[in-house]
Length: 614
Image 1: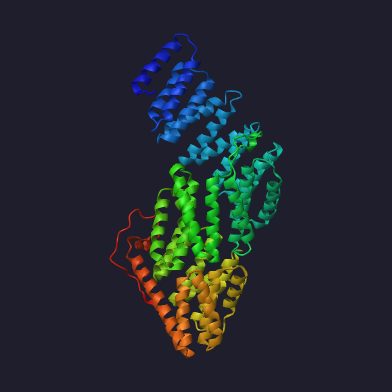
Image 2: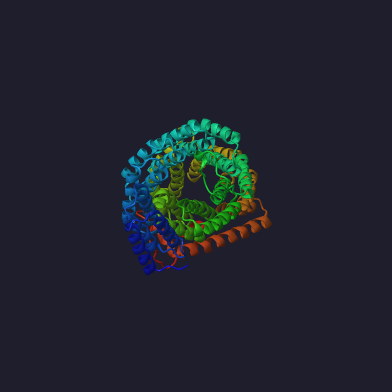
């Protein structure tokens, strides 16, 4: 059946006349709801007509229950389907006010509070959202589902404000409440969420017992198989990211394998339509499809750290393909966050494998995603400038690299990222050779021997490598202790790229010292490992050393073969260098303030030196 605007107006007039004539309004109220729902679900939706039908309800002078529910429906439709947020807010405020005067009207009351606080946050009225949620939490203790949902919502609001202490306190309250009402499933969700925030705060002494308790609850809980497996995925994701944050790439492998098996199990399970008997259990952590992308993401993170870059590329492609399908149907902000984090990791892979032009285009893609969401940009601005700094190093624009890293340091409060940036900035100062005061100041702040700022095994090994690199550039060839430490630490946790870098650096030191046999013993495995990663810069360095080594030892054929390899690597890097510097996106290296530039002007050819590549 088709309805047009004129038909709706005629219908509303008839309804009003019938109602004022003394007939019961209830059937006509239901009819108006039917009209409104028809227009809301039309393809495309006819929101104006839907709103018109709902507004007609008020002409009946309905009882408070109907009035409050209609205000909620209007507020929800306007909030989700229009840009008229002020009118939506007006209706939701009325729904919240009226519903508090009606007994046993919890669903409307707390849905109005939840949606209204969400709208307040969207309008940057956080100070209005907090007391609203606190009051709703206070009066919802007899309604387990809404009490838990509102606690989660307020905890999320504190998290977005970076008030993790308050968020953790609320999640702790939620866990205890869930235990009291007999919901071990939701108790685990609260505790795992708290564990995630404690990991963000680096409160490791509190994390370990909490994760142990979570593991016991998850294993002992008997309920919906999908819910149980989703809890296991949440638990294992926290364990894997904890290991990766600590730079323990080898130690994490058993947990990562369990996580991958768990997501495979979930993908074979069918959603059970039977609702849980306990209303406090009516929660899902993430949809199955989102969990699948998340597992791809942590696999990419592991592969990147371990130096399995082709594997990282493979899983990134799978994850991005899945994300594109999901974003056609789902506008959840978490999908954009997943996409940005995936791109950040694959950009680092591209720079290592010698695909700078592709990396630069993907950096521009991250900029575009961040332009669409101020919150996304706020969360990833430091990472974006760090990636640009790494790109600048790869094309030998050291002044720009310094500017990008300095900007990133100003924007981050994350200790691991801060240490990573400082380590790379130190490498820039080493290459420039005339920034001794700044360099020594940085090295003092990332001294791996004492007071190292983070617990990351990987970053501490990198700090030893930077110190060894400085000794090499300063001609202190007998001081290879730091490079040996790097080699030992990287071998212990299968950090392949650091292993390759430390091997080739040791090989170069031995070559300079005239110990050709020991140099060869280092450079050959360095080349093999660099080829496996593949790391184009280490391959270039190793092939140059092999050429000189074989020439010094009189191995003419091997020297010629190594020279040919070196020439091939040089040509590949040179071509990629020219391609990258010719892109209009290359001008991003000059951006150090404010939001990402909307338009990037093209420039005429590369402007950077190629000497470092040849």
